[in-house]
Length: 306
Image (tube, rainbow, N blue to C red; front, side, top):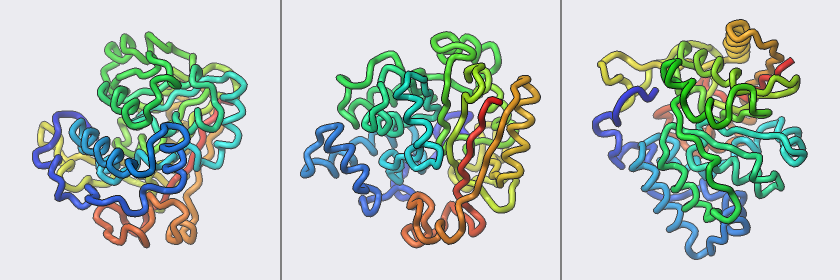
């Protein structure tokens, strides 16, 4: 999705995904983390969140930033999270790719995972300091665990980048990619998948897990303005998966890399989806279908080394 500078007009605060006011986003879970983990007083919480959001918007105006998704803990909502947390407590490592403001890692630490075993990566290096500002945890999360890197760089650049040189091939037990892979078209999803498999530990049971926007009918979807054109003027698309197409993607990635995989992918049930089981995709709350479609579902997945 991102292959050039910020599109003209993208930073406007008139886009419907730039929420002027917090409504349902500051959930009890978010308040608990900001209070008990970060020490943000209740009276200052909203102003603190608005300030951080607008700084993040200035880095890059992702719709998820405008909608305060950095207050949503997608990894903790994953059905496999109760299996992941004990593994982290036992000393395994986790890399959060597309970390944004590091909300999922902070939730892991709050839930008892050793911070020394957690790593993060994103395209924008500015997110590291801004995440510390949001969560006020420089005393809890060690420096040097954030790697600014481009997962889609050419092979030579990626191989010499921070993920491959500071972590290295086969070094990570668990990789989280919450709301990340759906940013790309199929070709770039495949490139991303093969590179994640290069980072994944060679031990059986090592896994990649996450959730993303899925669809009953899989296929490329054209992005809407202002992200619909690349710098060269071509039309941008993103690939939306159902479980069958998602499994095909990872089987292809496994064949390319020679990694045997066990793949699981499920769409969130329509009744739960419409009832607001996951407010990030809740039509009842959002009401304006400016980016979602009637066939949109949340896709939960895990990809495990066999």
